[in-house]
Amino acid sequence: MISMPPSDNDLHAYVDHQLNEDDQRRVETYLAANPAAAKRVQAWQQDAQHLRATLSAALQQPPNPDLDPAIIRQRLRHRARRHLASAAVLVLAVGVGGFGGWQARQMTLLSAAAPMADALQAYRLIAQQGILPADYQTGDEQSMQGWLDRYFTQADRLPDLSAAGFKPVSGRLLSTEQGAAAMVIYQDPSGQKISFYVRPPGPKNFLLPRGSRRDGELQAQYWSGPGYNYAIVIPSDTPAAQKLKQTLDF
Image (cartoon, rainbow, N blue to C red):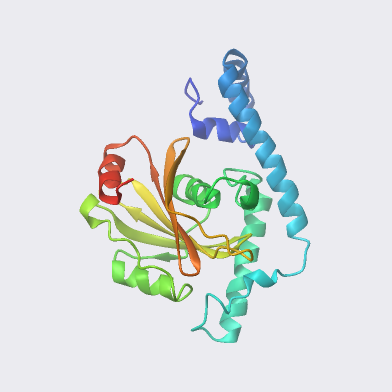
């Protein structure tokens, strides 16, 4: 049974038809009495519909040349590059087939979305919900940097967040409309998670000025470097987040 008022996770589960009948009725009763929440849920439902329609068309198209792994996997042999690119597409297909629009409703609609919307949605999908498992796990920052360098040879170094109590613990490769992406999850001793996200700017070379924005319960700091776009995503309004904001100068 869900709690009342429902949390964002409960509302997302309602959008994706993951609640039982009793909980679904409770949410519908709550939304009927709370127009602001109902409007927000309606927007999520529309986003999920757009995402499913977009992905349905995209997955039927031939391989996207923008995902050419030569850009991001220069140190791997040709067979390994092809295998990883295929795996990234398969992960996207499985994620769409198994979970519909769950949390990732804007990951391929970036051209019309706010800056680095895919980084925020990836955080919700992986760090919060745990829907996709990690590709790589370690408690060593140097080892994690080596894993990231295999696929993003010219990317910025992983940020050192040890002053705020965070260290990198896992990494995940993703496929986006702009090309292959990676997310590194950091964690502090209390279990609080943040993420470092990197991807190419896409065929139009859409680089970003340094900025920061809040999206619901999350906040993202984003910027661009030579050849890549970056974002750090943290949950807002927690003691660990406040310390991290001071470290990162959010």
